[in-house]
Image (tube, rainbow, N blue to C red; front, top):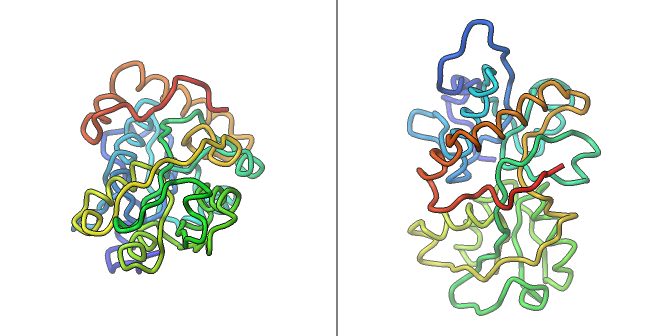
Length: 264
């Protein structure tokens, strides 16, 4: 996790844009305060924006919820939800059976492929054979870490990082051979000056629904069916009324929702 800036306390509870009535129910939406473009990024004033922030705003507006973005380190999000420090998690958290032992999830609100990138001067693919004897970087406590440990057993090392940005930096510096993450997030890195100079896409990993899950959803406490139902209805509504597509077109030239199916 990057060191908190002096503005962190002021930004600790950032109200999402949009007007809510005084009677709107306020919920704290947990997110990890780290750059994860184009889903989450921070401007010079310390405000957070990006596709996922816009989608959270749209979902909460549709559900008539006064949502407050609340920064929590990634590995503390689920504990914070369970202890009621936050009410929901909306931070590109994949829906998995392992996580559902501790929390519940809304229906998915996006699902994109999982990719592997590596140094341009190395030729290999995103398979166990291709990554044999390679050092593979992953963000800790993610589905990508779990996937790499399960499938890339012949890798020289599965190296874990607190943030994906740290893995990207080590890849650019030549300290690791590859990194696995969400394809959209890695594409944003590859389009950066640093990414263009060092690295390229090696391919997409083979599906594993058990590990990678059916997509990304909002995490809620087990038993909080009222909030879960509100979020599900709002996700369905913004898909139907065009708001989801309107937001997505600002960031992508394709629909990142994935196949039309139930996630739970």
